[in-house]
Amino acid sequence: MNNVYQEGRDFAMSYILPFTEITDKESKFPEESFKRLGEKGFLKLLIPVEYGGFGKGLEEHAQACLAFAESCSTTALCYMMHNVALMCVLTHGSEELKKKIFTDIVENGEFMALAYSEFGTGTNFYMPEMTAEVNRDNTTFNGIKSMVTSATFASYYLVLAPSVEEGKINNWVFPLETKGLTFELSKWHGLGMRGNSSCPMHMDNVTLDSFFRIGVEGSGEEQVFNVVAPFFVTGLGAVYSGTAMHMFEIASNHAVDRQYPDGRTLSNIETIQVHIGNIYKNAAAARALTLEAARAGANEEADALTKILAARIVASEAAIECGRLAMRVGGGKAYNKSLPTERLLRDAYAGQIMAPSADVLAIWLGKALTGQMIP
Ligand SMILES: Cc1cc2nc3c(=O)[nH]c(=O)nc-3n(C[C@H](O)[C@H](O)[C@H](O)COP(=O)(O)OP(=O)(O)OC[C@H]3O[C@@H](n4cnc5c(N)ncnc54)[C@H](O)[C@@H]3O)c2cc1C
Image 1 (cartoon, rainbow, N blue to C red):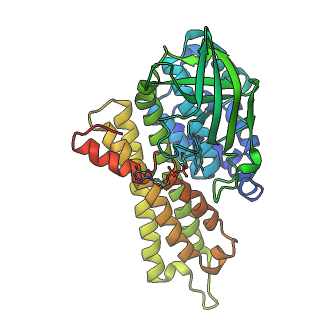
Image 2 (image 1 turned 180 degrees about the horizontal axis):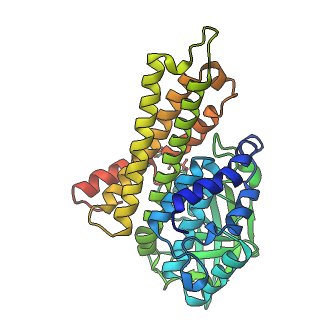
Image 3 (image 1 turned 135 degrees about the vertical axis):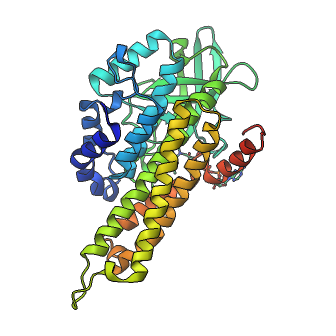
């Protein structure tokens, strides 16, 4: 894969866009798109070449998420979670664990999900309340993860759990078929991102041996802040920039196509021109900052962290603002849902509250810019 953004765009036109409407209308996980994501190699984008993948990194992760979100926010978000969980295994997993999971992704088109958030700790996902009791080489888990995107469709779940070492945490991989692991699909009623299947995951005496733990006991915090967070926060920036660009495309096409009886189009009206300009300006700024943040992150530049935090905040806010303006340009046609604008606006609303939320990130950004510890 040489130009991941362009290849992602082309892929999305054929294999994501056709399912976007039904994904939302029927709250249907985009299974057909994921099957094709496997066949065309996008699920193994980040897997090193020696394991049969493309060996790409943060920049290509952002490009793929952006390209997919320009067609379907739900598919892009589910794909983004897969890449994030995969990166944790890739950078810190044991050789045996990597082989098992990478083989399932490369050869069988399987994918991963992220099970971090809990009902109690909410946006502070890095402080899990679930329990983990160690008995020799086995650990038994109990508790509930609140919103697990791709639930029941993903084959492996990256779970953040407490360590036996006081105040420390671990990342584990839970295979879907593990005894004691159940999902409450009927509890997903998202305003947007409706195909996500982001439902609670119950862990009732789930018992795993240390094969499924990532890294040594108590090493989860470093994994969360050095790998999961940059891929997740940059990925969210890409998903919401793509959602904003999608809104621009819909609003501008509609403005050109919608014709009044006297032959004038919406796009001939100066106020509409200003709205279209503002939608583009917001979406393009979010996209540019996200791609720049990914580049800085990939090159481990000194200001990468602040760029990544800023990009995610800008993208979440841009998507909502673009949606608000696109609804205005779309008029009754947008309101009555003959344009997909309202769907995209509903999708966009997830951006500001997904952990770490835009409000929390704004605080982290201020801290990072003034040399203070985050979180
Ligand atoms: C579409 C979607 C998909 C998701 N997928 C996943 C997933 O795959 N895996 C996963 O683990 N989680 C997932 N989540 C969960 C998500 O990331 C959050 O953890 C969850 O939405 C937090 O919800 P809450 O109601 O408990 O928030 P609360 O913690 O109650 O927060 C409520 C509000 O208060 C604000 N707030 C709280 N604390 C502070 C603070 N200190 N400073 C400033 N503001 C604050 C928050 O920003 C938020 O706006 C998903 C969420 C959504 C919407």
